Image 1: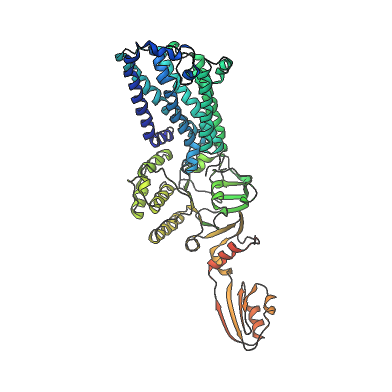
Image 2: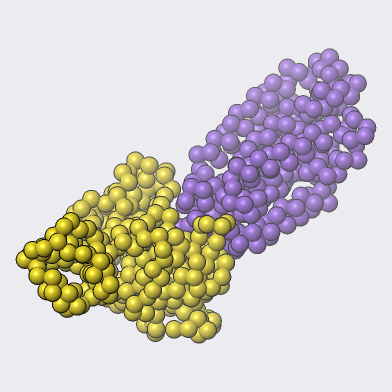
Length: 262
Length: 325
């Protein structure tokens, strides 16, 4: 029955998903609650005033005493994408390659459902898990309105969608590598390396001149690296990430159909 | 059945047990799968009829699980073909899997779920709602369904694996080392279950390296070694053709070489007046030869089928021949 593999995998990932959600919510609440203590501390802006590469590397650019700057430096430029990617890359690498290595995939692959259906169900489970961290964070940021931390709804929705699509992009990349190789370690390693390089390019591009053009090849740029906390997420940028995830997902169907399941 | 007649079904297949099969349930022709130079299976050709209990024997690493995975469409063949219910396992996996119950050789279940959660989920996917037979099997095997898998012993996990394979009453059961981890009482119960299943006209393809189990349960068997089928025959026929051990004691020292020339006779050991021989087939020519040498005593012991199997396992040169089919 359609969706049963989704429900099975979500059940298997229940603890880890709840853990990521609660963890990021706790951290986001602390960031939000601390904002009133820092919002008038103009010395904080000196960290980013001269375009420091070290500050940029940590995700701190522009004014850190504005709501957007504070949330960017402490949440959306670093920790939220990091936790999001831990959740989605982890699931993407384990749901086909990992289950094959654990010898549980054969039981699923011998049920009367096509491998295409299994892949779609796993993609749906990935999408569901990709929503948890961004939504938990967004709810905490909304709670920040009670702590003088007001971010406009449009940019908040935009950055939430951006982080979700970023997780989906790298999660489906891990899914594809896992389905093509049957090797969880390879899927985790290659995708994590790609995500780390992408982060470096996007975070350093604003302060390192020669790296500036390369930001266009970084999914981080399309998700959180182009002032999304101020201007929202352009539809074109969302389209780039969604198209990438879709291409990975479609290619996964082909790769999984060819995979030897043990 | 030729694989040229592999069916390309139109529309929906019937569920397990509702559609009488015509011709062999499983057919493979020259089925080959290579994993590099040495591993894999080569040119495996078998046919399994409806209602038959078919044993698939071989030492570890011989290619039993590889063949099973090819039959289930989990692997793609390098060459040759397989058909289950006349269907290509890769192209028509959904129709085929609806009619098959599978127990993997290295059974691993989701450790944090209970047996009941797994069974319910899989039953939903199969669209199987009648749990009476499942409940009957739970009672027969004393299966613990409400504890997480990671808290169960290997034998108890294996029982849940058997339940996953049998619960929807499939037309074909493909069981890879099914009694691994079961105690002797449950092995007997499993034997009864297989017999009942075959009596209902359902088919069992059973891989094992437990020779005793195979002798008790199967109608026909194939032995695979180093990825090649070395023999396919009925257990009855194999038993009849199993070599007997014959020992003569003579009054005078004899030259054992004169027995070597006889068809189906092999000298196992000799001393001056005693000769121990392995004899396959009719014993008449041997008796004629022995009588001429003035024997004083003779003993004959029918060899165990196990000896025959082990002979195939040990022999390096391929005795590739097929009796029966």
